[in-house]
Image (cartoon, rainbow, N blue to C red; front, side):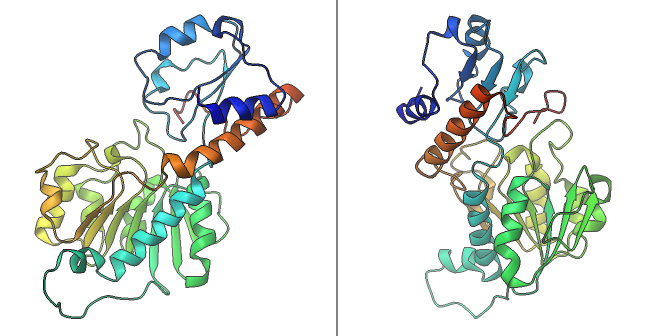
Length: 292
């Protein structure tokens, strides 16, 4: 486990012990899927497991209802919301086009002020984004499973209404968990429902977007362009057609980086360990049945 997470655990008053003796596990490596089942089997006494990322799709098949599972929900929301603002401003000011230019371009661009934005997702990331976007006076629609209103959003609708929700948007931002139900949610029908001057922005997971459908929409000019921090596959291979589109801006999954995220994760670990020891409710609980 990373030294910062060890220190956070110890600050909360817990003791680091061999896996077989632990009643709680702090899992630090989301990519180590191949050893996860074996190590969890060795941690037979562990009643609580803290996972590092908000997205748990790669580990979800191994989660059981007999343990308490928590993840990094909300830990990186402010960092990712900052990237969302960067993406929006870059898109609306045509930065993807200007950044590729090797000669002076015709003037273009539009304001973010008062824009109509649709968020696919209504969790902690959406909440952080709504706080940041508030001074711009945007009209924000949130699409989520539960139509409970979010502060700062003009309206909240259910997933079944997503096609209508994107119909008048200047930008559609994907910021929801990846589950079997949300995989491929940005497909040909949804892209066709967007105005031809609307931008697609993805800060969630690459598998939310059907690549062939996105490429078709870009080729046909039925959307303005895309800003992608995540792709499928990831890393996006050299020579992939998305690299060739002048109105596509791709960043290498930097909505949150290890340098940004580790201090935030350490703070979450420390707080949850403290709560665990005190018998209090933990932050970032995972719904095993829903997969996030």
